Structure formats: structure tokens, C-alpha cells
Image 1 (cartoon, rainbow, N blue to C red):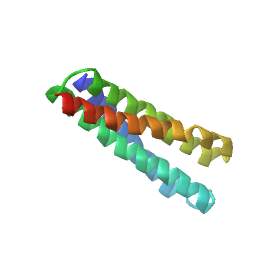
Image 2 (cartoon, rainbow, N blue to C red):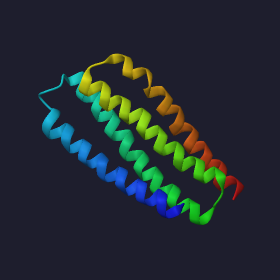
Image 3 (cartoon, rainbow, N blue to C red):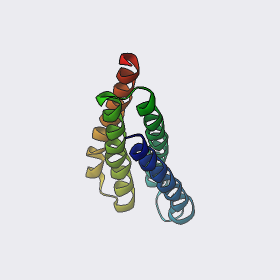
Image 4 (cartoon, rainbow, N blue to C red):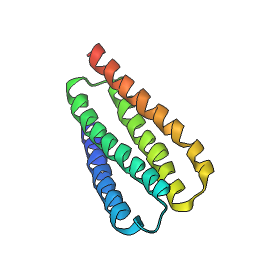
Length: 122
């Protein structure tokens, strides 16, 4: 799993940088400041958890097991739900999409706690 999580983390990081550039160069002036801030929040958490996936890839080589694998999948799920919903909300203006965002936040928290558990048990 170390290789898979590293590839996913690196790919998510590249996508996060591209999303940040898109927001800075294309969306600025097209979105309200509030919606641009929502988009930028999505980018920030996207990039943080891309790095989190890279740390999971390393952790699988040091403390392999189901908890560290769960952390990786939870970071991926959290990025899709949290950042994805914020991207969709900011680009569409459909505020109800914000109801999905907390599910991604819960996945992020659970991922970090799973990583703690993996290291603790290791």
C-alpha cells in the first residue's frame, strides 16, 4: 500500500496546486469574495491531506497494518467529500452542497486518529 498511497498523495498534491492556480488566475474576479474564500479553503485542506497521504505511505513501511491503511483511505475520502463539496459549492453557488463538507471533515479527523492509533500500536 505504501506505493499506492504515495502515488495518490503525489497526484492529489499536483491536482491541489492546479486547483490553487485555477482559483488564483481564473476564478479571481469571476466569483464573489465569499465563494473564492470557500474555494481556497477547499484547496488548503486538499493540499494538507495530499501531504497526509504521503505521510501515510511512509507510515505503512514503518507501522504496517489496517489502521494505517484506514488512515490513507479516510484522507482520500475526506479530500473528495470536503474539498470536492467546497469546489462544487463555490463554482455552482448551490449552498446545499455545503451539507456534505462536514462528512469530509469527519473523515479527515478519523484519518488522523487512525494514524495515531497505527503508530501507537506499532
